[in-house]
Every structure is written in C-alpha cells, then in structure tokens.
Image (cartoon, protein in one colour):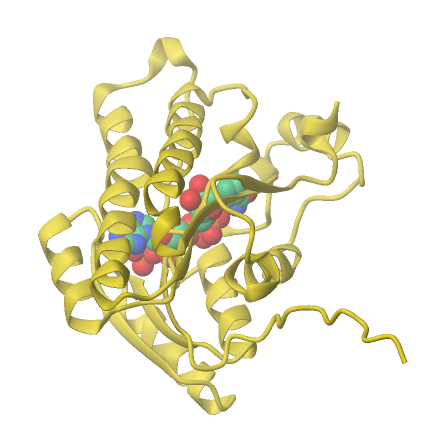
Length: 255
Ligand SMILES: NC(=O)c1ccc[n+]([C@@H]2O[C@H](COP(=O)([O-])OP(=O)(O)OC[C@H]3O[C@@H](n4cnc5c(N)ncnc54)[C@H](OP(=O)(O)O)[C@@H]3O)[C@@H](O)[C@H]2O)c1
C-alpha cells in the first residue's frame, strides 16, 4: 500500500492565542474561531464588560479563555501584559480604527489616532509577542489584520491606506528577522466586512453600490468569512507561509 501524505492539522489544541480587538467584529470572531480549534484565547480590548461577556460565552462553550481590558496604544502596559500572560503561540492583532476623510480635509488629530493604533501599537505589540516566543525558544504565528486597502487605494482613505500599506511592509520585515526562530508573521486582508467599523460606509448608498461593484462575488463580507482563513494561518497547515498576506476580498483586487 502506498503511504498517503497527510494534511497537517488545522487544530490548535495546547496553543495560547492573544487576540486584540476581541470585544467586537473581526477580533471577536477570531477569538471564537481559535477557541473552536482548541486554543486557549486571551482577549484584549478596552471595554471590560464586552470582554467578560465573550470570555464567559467561550467558557460556557467548553473553551479556555481569559481577558484583560487594555488600551494597546499604552505601550508599557501592553508589554507588561504580554510579559505577565505570555508567551503566546498565536497573535491576532485586530484592534483598529478608521476615520475616513478626503486627504485635503484630514486633521492631524485623526492622522495621529489612526497611525497610533493601526501601525504604532501593532508594531510594538507584535514585537513584544515575538520577544516572548524567542525567550521561550518557541515557534509561533503572528497575524496582523490589515485590509485590501493595504494593497490598493480607496476614496477618503489616504490615512487608512497609509497605515495598512505600512503594516504590510512591517510584516514582511519582521517575518524575515524572526524566521530563524520559527516565528511566522503574516497579514489577513479583508474586504468590507459587516462590523461596527464598516457600518457608516455601508449605510451610504453610493458607497454601498461602489463596494458591490468591486466585490466580484457580489456581497459584503461577514465575520464568518474570516474565521477559516485566521485558523488556517494560525495552524500547522500554514507552516511554510510567512512574510505574506492572505486577501479575502471576493475578487476586489483581482481587477
Ligand atoms: N470591517 C471591515 O470592513 C474591515 C475591513 C478590512 C480591515 N478591517 C480591519 O479589521 C480590524 C478590526 O476591525 P472591525 O471591523 O472588527 O472593527 P470594530 O468592530 O470596530 O472593532 C475594533 C476593535 O478594536 C478595539 N480597539 C479599538 N481601539 C483600541 C485600543 N486603543 N486598544 C485596544 N483595543 C482597541 C475595539 O474594542 P474597544 O472599543 O473595546 O477597545 C474593538 O474590539 C481593524 O484593524 C480594521 O482596520 C476591517
């Protein structure tokens, strides 16, 4: 009998995952997906009540979950949290914000807020999680939630595109630095996904028509569309994937 190759496991039993932005949208779904695959999830966002509700729901489903209310733009507090609760085998960094405006109208305050969370906090958080893994001599999978807007431009999105394109570059460079430690670093790049962050844009009929004309599969994304891709990137099934991006955009960027 020929010995057949076996698909590497998509399971995450015994792994510890840190998920930021876990109180809402994509981060919440990421936490649920990783927990469903067997990981112990540590939930982070600023709002404690939302985190506790999710933590309790995950525990009730039989998963292992903890939560820390934290503003990840506080770099010292974030580093202390990672040192206290890590090392984390998996990071899904989904904390993010959008303040869309025409480039001519962008205020320095909105520029700073978006860059501070979407890029600066992501940079130092990813670094601290890698530091913990390297100290423990463990491999890992670090996933930054970027966007299709990390690969193309979009209206009123000069700042958002700037920080997501930068996140792509940061991810590639970190992947090169930490590959020797077995630490993989990738981005997941969604199209428009129905979450509180996208709500305003999706309510605008002109924008909605534009979005549906660009998503060739003909519908806006749901958080469930990202749960398989996140689990895949976190798992041994993606063992040779690093320094790159997985675009989940219904064909938007194919055009
Ligand atoms: N939805 C889309 O269409 C879409 C498309 C492409 C990419 N993305 C990206 O996906 C990520 C998640 O977006 P989403 O749609 O899930 O948005 P969302 O529902 O608004 O969730 C954003 C999350 O970030 C957390 N957060 C915000 N500021 C924080 C801070 N300073 N420290 C810690 N946590 C903070 C929020 O929790 P608290 O308020 O409790 O802190 C919340 O859990 C973002 O990076 C976004 O750019 C979204």
